[in-house]
Length: 169
Image (cartoon, rainbow, N blue to C red):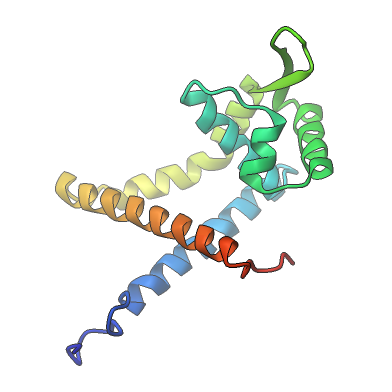
């Protein structure tokens, strides 16, 4: 049985903490919209650059198919996305392999400069906010955030497998 002072439903998460995570997600989305809009970039463009950066940093090849899969886009939407990023000077397309049909995507120095300019204010503010925490506290937060990401992925996978996927707006 739950203690009356605990805001957690039996077997559930503390609702105030879930609300804080929801608020953080909403505010992060607002920031991305503001930063992207100021630079004539769609949220999908910024998400694509994040995917390319993450895969490239891990030494993995990034193709339009990787973007299509990770961003859950149709083939035409992926083509339009890659065309936009190429036209804006944020990615290059290089032929891959011996048959030269597959394309590998690379971020350009312009993409890194623009990304830094867009997200440096957020990184600075977050750094200032984190400075009041000890290394041990930040280790707990790292573990917590990794667990929240894992839980979100598991819930998304379960929802998709059960056919309860939300409709896009």
